[in-house]
Amino acid sequence: MASPLPSSLHRLSLLSKPSPSQNHRLLVTPTRPELSRFECRAGQTGFFTRLGRLIKEKAKSDLEKLFSGFSKTRDNLAVIDELLLYWNLADTDRVLDELEEALLVSDFGPKITIKIVESLREDIVAGKLKSGSEIKEALKKSVLDLLTTKGSKTELQLGYRKPAVVMIVGVNGGGKTTSLGKLAYRLKKEGAKVLMAAGDTFRAAACDQLEIWAERTGCEIVVAEKEKAKASSVISQAVKRGKEQGYDIVLCDTSGRLHTNYSLMEELIACKKAVSKVIPGAPNEILQVLDGTTGLNMLPQAREFNEIVGITGLILTKLDGSARGGCVVSVVNELGIPVKFVGVGEGVEDLQPFDAEAFVNAIFS
Ligand SMILES: Nc1nc2c(ncn2[C@@H]2O[C@H](COP(=O)(O)OP(=O)(O)OP(=O)(O)O)[C@@H](O)[C@H]2O)c(=O)[nH]1
Ligand SMILES: [Mg+2]
Image (cartoon, protein in one colour):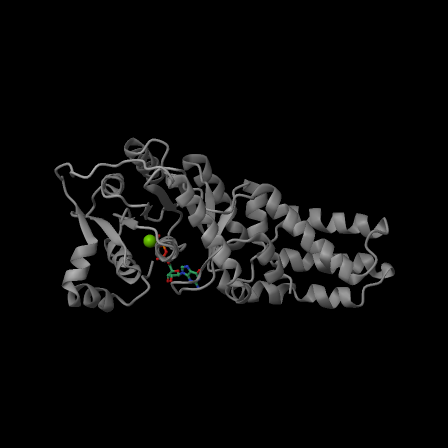
């Protein structure tokens, strides 16, 4: 997929600043063992817990971004307000039919939609909901419940040992590299020492794209020296360096692959194994990037990736360009995997930690 800057600029940025780019660029070559040793210091648990919490808290003060990121979905669902404004009991069936339509159009999916609408109908018939505003509140609460019962661990779980390792996986063009860059920016801003691993060895330009993110965020990066190097080898070397040189977090990019391509899926298994060989128990997070514009079509790929490598969290991207934000609820409900971040734009600050309540308020104005 296209990188965030025109390719002419890649070269320019790399060539025009030889020393910084050489500084941050670590080639994967056979190296002598480094002198520095990894030691698990006390208090590291606290560091990662604090980091996860800080990122989440900061996001709460940035609700504006989330709110504008979901504007298209909110526009789709605005019809619900009009429906409920003049709601009366005699009109229930028609109003609920139209509400159902609005949820379906926003990709909540048939299963969730029926569940929500039928529970509203029951409460209306039982006299528990007596006004349009009560119905709206009940609707928001049922969406919130769906999100929080199955996908509650939305903070990054980085374990207790340094470096924590995060692998980013997904199909082609979903926004993996961009999300990795934005995540590095957030982590770095909170004081973490971040190392990037250019594990997309499949596409020649992929490494350049990640290098631009490394420069932009001031992170170091491990890249393959040779073309078509094994992804697992680059990732393994990066994790080794991360361990030896006291990094807090190693973020590993991987190449895009279709969930139906078994040999490429096997390569992912190899990457995961290579990480755990260096640090038993790692990777701490395997985050799957899902393209929000594909709506419910993302479900089969998410299911397959999860079965093969075990996904610990989801990053839903491009929600700013999508009116199908309801798919967030379906994905969480169907897979029971938490959404950890949402991408709401192409800028460096446009990766928002997912907060279920803020999401519900952003889609139902
Ligand atoms: N609007 C918008 N665009 C995004 C978002 N996330 C990524 N993109 C854009 O999507 C395009 C693809 O992003 P990449 O990060 O290259 O995707 P990838 O998954 O790494 O692609 P491959 O490595 O080719 O599989 C780029 O143009 C990004 O700028 C987002 O949240 N919102
Ligand atoms: Mg990529």
